[in-house]
Amino acid sequence: MVDTKHFFICGSALTGQPDHQNLQGANLICATQTLPLYRLYSVDDLHPGIYEVSEGGISIPGEIYELTIEQYNNLMANEPPGLYEGQIKLEDGSEISAMLYPQKLIESYGWPDISKYGGWAAYKQHLLDPSAPHP
Image 1 (cartoon, rainbow, N blue to C red):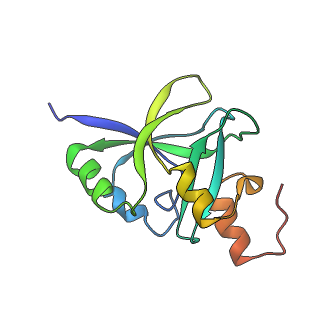
Image 2: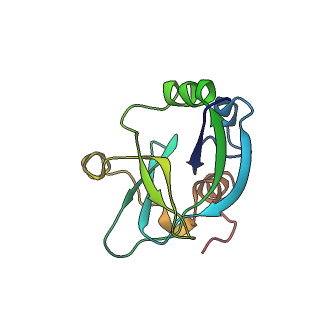
């Protein structure tokens, strides 16, 4: 039996995003979103940084993938510095592994809060077409 791990993806490895190949063909389980407990930041417009907040959080859309150990190790090897694996809460109340970013680093670099766009893919689309409406 092959060991696998379920993982929540909400940034540059999403379907249609430039780092999707880092998932190496992992099985997409479903699209989902987090409970409204997080803020979303753009880290140099390369990847999102998310962390949990006690108030003013949003639901972050993403995808759940089933990764083999090899796919998981490849994903971790290709994650940018600063990101770390932690647990997030999904809309159904379950918890799953995801990549988080330290709030202190976000604040120290002054990276922009992009929560108003509702997700990483929507933010990246806004960068391509700033005239497109967003929430």
